[in-house]
Length: 214
Image (cartoon, rainbow, N blue to C red; front, top):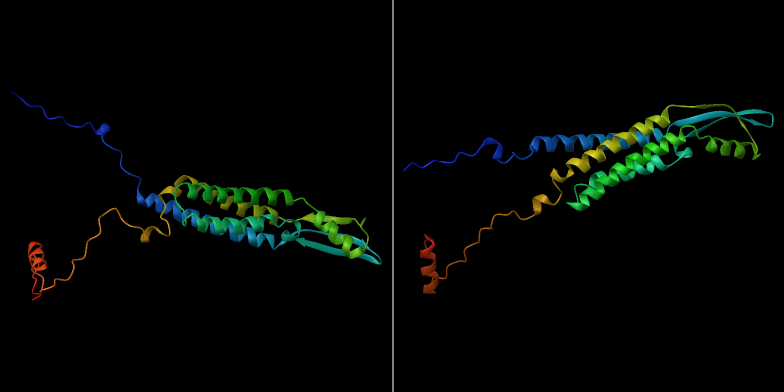
């Protein structure tokens, strides 16, 4: 009687696990994008976004406003994004997904705020009214710079880091991972042998130890 050995079909075999190298690459990319995006958004918020000339008694007064004068949202969300990027490694499972989503939302909010503030002249109007003492003061020769769009680009980088965290974050290590117990059983330390107790001597011999300690 012939016995036929079943050979597993290659398609039925389990798929290999995701490469750790891919997880490291996505982690490095998220860290780089998040840190760079936050730095760009913070830097752009400190630069000049718009300028103009206000009419005052005796002549004109040139005025400029920074991004932080127009809107503080991009800078604030950049800081939130940095905090979320660090917090991704402090939580696991559902908490990591929520923090990664917060990271992505921080980037999206920074983009929206920067784009909306690109053509906003209300901060310049308020500065002109304060300088001239006339709430109806107008701004002439109004111009805008490209810094709001630089801040929006920083927000896009933070958004990209958040998307990577949402997709690949489950495979990233956590801060407490190295301190957690592994699945392997821990070795039990043998109790010191008391030479005055015969049962301890016999137990040591059963374990293959020398009870005399020689």
